[in-house]
Length: 212
Image (cartoon, rainbow, N blue to C red; front, side, top):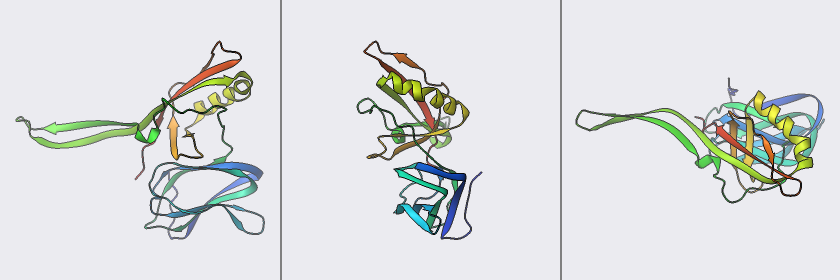
């Protein structure tokens, strides 16, 4: 199921049960390429920008991380668009930020295309066409030197959330828009590194490819 406006400008709104501090928003399964979109919250008297109007250049997942805003109502304001876009997933909340960074050895998810193709050829080897059967994005994350206290506080909740539904994950979100809307078939365990009080963990994900 997807939300789609009938006219532009248009707004997609999330109303919470009560005033909540929020520091992250994410969108996936959309066709916003070419649209100008702002992330806003209701102050009680007017709409205020969290992220000012920004041109969306493609249909890949989007994540914004920002200083916390406390409000009951948040929205995406689409002020201009070449058509009538669709949005499948719009979420707000607070991100779990890893205490260590990943630099070398990680493949950004937007380049991890896993496409199953079936090629058709004649009896004499002539090329007759190709069918794209399915496509997804995939990558692996691996973290070293996770403090045990941080793991104790956060990891079980992360595992339970991953079991329940798809999730957004971003690599270096402040300086890279490498964002995936993903699932995993194996809930990530942690293990002791044998170095001081540190632990390590890894996560293999399969993500939604560009929609539309």
